[in-house]
Length: 559
Image 1 (cartoon, rainbow, N blue to C red):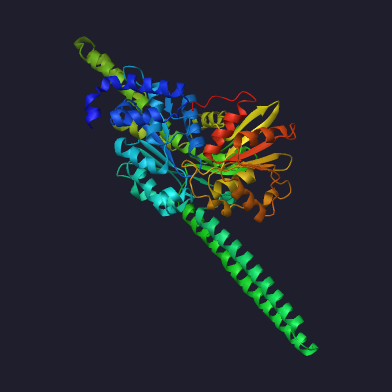
Image 2 (image 1 turned 180 degrees about the vertical axis):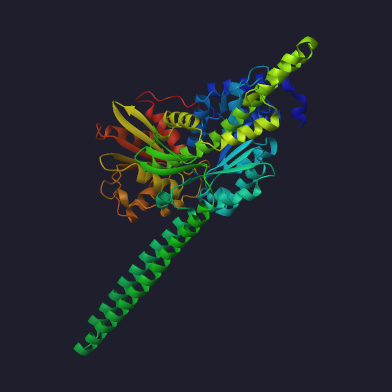
């Protein structure tokens, strides 16, 4: 506090920009200037964001934050708003402050209409203590970085703090029971909207509970197969050792009975596990059906999708790879619609205010009173008194705004991937796709979205703070889809752990090299004409991207 008292607010932008320039000169991280400014002027972030006429859109959840934030920001820009965002994925409050330092003027002015900000689940709590978001978009809750967050219900509680701080519109994933339940935390006067899936797509997007029921079922299945094999082997050994044919026959019978018993027990247990997964999914589906979605993802085909809004269906082809990004697009459109509804309402209000001012001016001219009265009678709907205009607007709102939604579809179709999130980099004319993975669900969907056939595959796993220290989640990912092709290179701090995990699923890891720089060079040199996939955790992705940049042009992510 003493340091804060010694720093006049007017000097904060200049000081922050100087620290930012020095950090970049020495190759420092993007968040460092924000950390300094947070210490010296804790009110800088709230004071600066308070300038925005349309407030803040907060985006949080386990998976999809960076891509969804990029979609929302891009869509709102294309629809005419000047958007401030934190594009690098630095999603702690100090990352937001650093991004502000890059955009704010020396006088502290932020030239933007609205902010679209990605916030880490835990740091969203810190953010909303200082800044109340006008819009909050909550995507999902999955088991991720349990060394930081603890159990999944704790993550949901953290997101609940953001929901409870929202002043305008709260947008929730109706397919995730823990997220949908946060509607009850919305303050009085805060609207709640949902995005969702058509029933036919729900099996492709399992909830965390249904996924873990499946994993439990798979584990029991393996265990029971092992018990059966062990029992049969023990019985066979006993039969060989037993004296006489009669003893052998008895032992064989015992073995058969034991094996059969094991098989029956296994079948019963597996059935129960499968039933558990189906029950979890059915419960989630039933709850979701009760909630009307503002935007529904109806069908997917590669990177093409059909969305439903206000009863109308719209087709779109996205530049974003991965089936999960089509659902992220539905989420982004839901919050963008809420924002644009408010923008239109404010424009109408401004039009009414302008018209009222004109009428007052005419009223002041006594000679023209009659003209003013006649003019008032002829007002169009947008300039009628508030009560009447509100009724007119409500009637119009019940009709599909086809033109507005088509503009929305055009806007999402033009969005390109965020760095490292399905980003394609050309190396000597060959596409290399960088795919961020950080938890079981994300890795599973990535493997589904990026088929291995015809591609070289590399997996890079680090365990730094931003990745999560606990890598046990790798055992919850099914890697059997890679059996046919194998993995060309495994790298990163946890390369040997990853290779062991692949071995348990019968996937060959042809090369293991913990040194990321060397491993990337070897991977790119091997079969140089073959398209490639690189799956990596967050800090590994930064290292891979930096190394790939020594071979070809890589867009500056502002890191």
